[in-house]
Image (cartoon, rainbow, N blue to C red):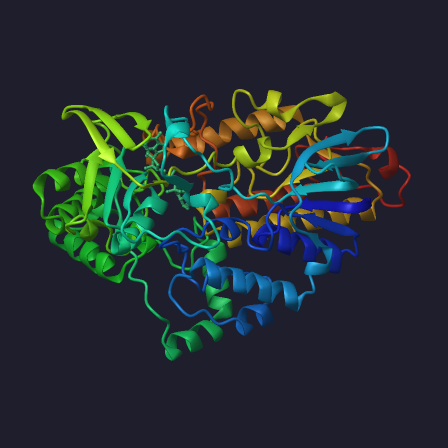
Length: 550
Ligand code: NA7
């Protein structure tokens, strides 16, 4: 089947890209989606306690005032079912479903140079082709199940949080082991503990967390959201991370210890990712960061009654927010329940999974943890995983899997050299996971759509970045990360450290979303600087593309 554009994925990115290309540019578009329905990450992540960490008034599209004002969220942080309902509302409003094919797993995409078309093949053997190929595959969609010896022999059931069964899992009367204490594990543990007979949390790296303070939205707050479109959008588009709250202008060490304590206490009581915004230098000054880190560690010690458990939970080895900072509902309190225990894997690593549970061996000797269910809250092969899951072949048959062996190489996280007309929404090298995703997605979709519109207008055949532009951007991405404390948490998934054998390269762009968006806009305004456009057809066009970036 032939189209102008193929979009892979039907989450936020795929839906908006379809709408933009089809309804603004008039292209024939097909969206191919692996899941059985809309939602992307929210189609798959249905684990207990799952909830978005972005606030509901900002975790939505802002490209249409009408759309923004028509939707009402029920809580401060939306749960997956509400996000799926929202995306369904968007799809109905713009009549998007008719161009989406669900249950369609893209296996391969090959650039056919002679025809200047991308040839896409699904696992079921269906074939499609299009001039433009846009990946909207998400950053956190390739589940990472660690290769733990013995898993195949486990007699109980096991689940990864990112592939949770739609019918749910009944924990009543079950002994549950949860591996992983990232944002997901921190959300899941309190809810699993409510019904499990016993929950054992296996912690490799202790983590900071701040209360989410989720609550239903009052009628007044809903009204405020409806009437604050301009303000919310302007804030989200002008901040470092795309959230609709401002980051303090003040440095932490400019405040007295008492003032700082008061600031942190207020932020703790208010809850949410705003804790990271209490002082402007928390991610650039270790001394500033230490003040926030110590505050959270003191809170953990104050909440958790058992001193050994408290020590393990507060023994955090990285700066606050240098790994993605979770927010929680009663996470640390959960360890005061009689049916919850913590295993510190730094002291007692997993030796193997046995038919009856998990065996650790370390400071406590050999210990068997009998389990009926194992929950892997072990995260994702982030950013590159979903792209490399597709066998992508570019110009001359070059393979993305080969090209990225030493880490992802992109220009702006939007395109790769040698892969003409392929765009990667929130790809590695863009702010992506360091932001409130819908805001980053909108910026990419609009940039890609404007680019395609311009190329079509001028009859330009192909666009792809120059190798030098890719190299320079890659260096810039590393430099931006080096300027922050994110660089100090070498074991974070931002570096790919959670997946065995993955190259250790800092993947997202840490220079801030607003700055990045300006940079992308300037590049386009300067005639797509750094990109190579095939002028064969441009030369014939009445108005050639000005200074087409070569
Ligand atoms: P994360 O943040 O990658 O967390 C995964 C957790 O699983 C983390 O605590 C890991 O420890 C742990 N983990 C991973 N592999 C293992 C093995 N082999 N043994 C023990 N423990 C392991 O994923 P999440 O799903 O929580 O969150 C992902 C993002 O989703 C989040 O940042 C938000 O953006 C939304 P580690 O820290 O690597 O030592």
